[in-house]
Amino acid sequence: DGGITQSPKYLFRKEGQNVTLSCEQNLNHDAMYWYRQDPGQGLRLIYYSQIVNDFQKGDIAEGYSVSREKKESFPLTVTSAQKNPTAFYLCASKGPVTGGENYGYTFGSGTRLTVV
Amino acid sequence: RKEVEQDPGPFNVPEGATVAFNCTYSNSASQSFFWYRQDCRKEPKLLMSVYSSGNEDGRFTAQLNRASQYISLLIRDSKLSDSATYLCVVSRGGTASKLTFGTGTRLQVTL
View 1: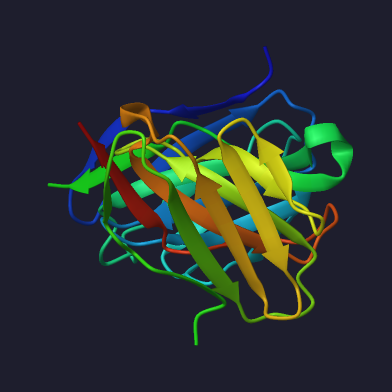
View 2: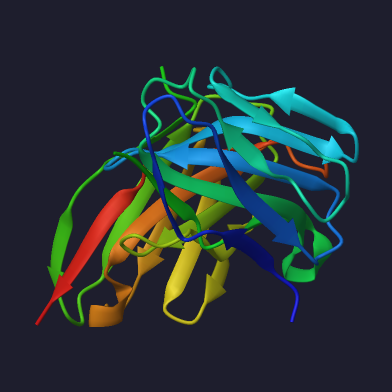
């Protein structure tokens, strides 16, 4: 079955450490996205990529970096420059839904990052 | 003003009740509209797309009013399993555009 896989499910980061969150999809979607969700808040866009070897900053890109070397993969690195990284991170890809009229997101199951 | 606005709730309703959520969006260029459902500590999942003519999927009915720039979701005969946060989502449409999410409306269905 096609889908998006995020790993790890839980991640603990020490102060000053960089960590990388994995996101892999086998849906053959071109566009992929990273969102952050804080408790009781909506999703905020970090980075997105519409095609291999290209990506753009979202609304809250500071302290994060991404790469898109393969269509299937869009890893997110949370750097030490991100001062408040504790959050739920969601990766999504975009493709046709419900008969192909609209393009919606399919999400991975998320990674919970905690700074310790 | 937020691009997509929703009443955060919570809406507490008894099982079997009918409940409606509204959502307003500010970008008149928006072309695609969705409702997503998010369970506690889980990822959002597509509930249904919203079409101009309105559409129904079982107990769920979605409506779009482009003139007033609002979207609604009606849930009939609420079940305990409907308890979740419902996210209103809009997009300019097509393969290249981003989706913009509302902060969600929380529904709690009780016995």
